[in-house]
Length: 397
Image (cartoon, rainbow, N blue to C red):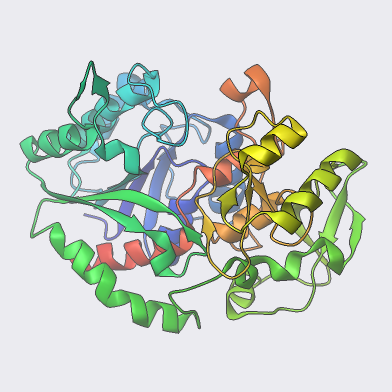
């Protein structure tokens, strides 16, 4: 078996792949259906970083996992004994408590595609991530049905894996975001529980090596990206303004800006939204009168006739709440605007050298086909957590 070789399923824009790369893993290939998300992954980790030993039989493009299974099952079986790890979890939108949670969401069936992929390859270790709602059964009449997490655990046990799943709060691992996710680990040898023990034991040394603490606030993450620092013409969007870096103000910012050539004073994807004057006034009112990390109350909804489910004023002194794929869910902690894509990326621990591709945002029916930059980041696994997971998975081999 090639040491530290892995396949990344449902890879998105590459958060997990970047973390595993930094932890010393070598990718074989990645499967991602979205053209936009795959373009970001390809630019950063396939074309530039040479992170994958991509096989000649699979085109370097976005793929649907079911098509890969249908067309290449013989090639996948030939990879048995050559793949240490299968990483990545199916899309979570059908399970998410934040959105429209629907059992009939077609994406939920990708669980079976994932299990079939594992059956064909038989890796030593599995690392699987999903939303907290994955552990909660859908309501059937008045009772709850079986949770998908229980189904996955039982199916993987049938394939010979020792399996353990737990809810992890990423803010305890240096990420400036209170993001809770279901992490499942399966192993053919030894105990899967060992992963979670090692993860906690390894945390202090890892964070110390990065000069971080286990509590990173939102201002630690993004205070060098303020609009007040100055603006210039956006390099990738005509008629938009982008932000200019200020001095580094925290160890987290220093880490995120490593390797960034600061002759270019503009961060990638740091384009400001063009808010209407009345929107700016509304945001100023919210900034002055709403408690941080709380959604607006009914008084504000009625005053401005707001139909939106959530608008949260962020707090500068604590981690952000879980980022969604909708940037207008949040208002910057001290400027009357939504966050930029780069600020989203910082909160998810993507370094500033990581460039995002595709449209910034989209709406209406285009949401079914486009995965714009905000959505790519909102769906990602934070690379800083993925790196810690990757280190621990290597220790388990």
